Length: 483
Image (tube, rainbow, N blue to C red):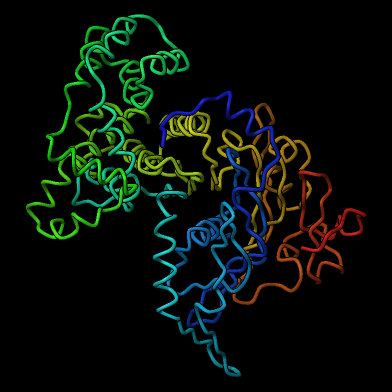
């Protein structure tokens, strides 16, 4: 696994049509409460391609976060995925949803939910190999997501030790194979301005391509001078484990990061376990420092030893982003990552997400209630209202020609520079009660263009190849398809 990637290769791969990385089809999520069954998400469908940034926008309570939690299979205890499919990288994450629970309801009685504990346990075991490794999530409030009793370094390292043991071992073995003679050519050219491609070619000629991430990190650092860069690159050849530790690391490398059979008994002894894993834990801490530096964390070396409450909101959010990107996930879900930050820090986080998307080619599902923030980072946008996905379009299409009356109302309510108004335009009415939502279109009670047909379930209409809308106003189109 590499922490860097060739941008040229990314462009070629993106030009080739592929199956979507994430496909959500007909997703319905409900919550069983004392008041009744809340239909939180109703038949939501969308796709995200590899390397794409897809935005979900809508007012508070429309189902954005619950959609993200359903993808991660982290729906709260009172919630169930009633139907639908979630496909990630060719894997169906909802293949057993009909066996995960049993929902019964007698006449005029509250529905009762009974969960299949053995099936849920199996689901968690399967999802633990995907969560944090293939799919990562940046939560809205980092202070409640980070553990207050552990340092930042321990929390970032935990992700690496859980999912990236093979990467950590490979980094140690790569340094062990390096010599001062092999590194001399690198140190001689470190005084010049080199691109990452030039560094890669130089390392390939020297047989040090496995050290690319570590050497490029040193060369690209801006907080140290040339002399220190040369010294740090030279010191890589001196950071070697003991011969006995090397034997363990070689066996661990052969087993792809899983504990070798011959060491399993020794691993049960606390003292020996700490000795066996000490070198790997130190490597995880070093890589955590590199990740924090990558997300522009000020004074990253000291931050490793600090606790979450000692950091500002922007710094905590950078820690969350570093943890999310530690395993080079294919998909990053960012659930309103800038809502608790001031405008200056918000701009820095958005720029950081754009840069990381370009560097790692990770797809991003960006959730926000602020359409201005969505416009800064997303390629395509989905608009949600009362649990429905009412419109999906490319960013330029949505801003130039919004189709759904709710989307049009959102744009009309945004104040425009230079335009004088006594009152801002609003969308009349309130969001419907999702225990007993309106029949047909859920927006019809607030829509100025509603007509008789709106009492029926609206169709999903593709008004353009990349532009779809859930509305009867376009229901007679020849491009009409049932959702």
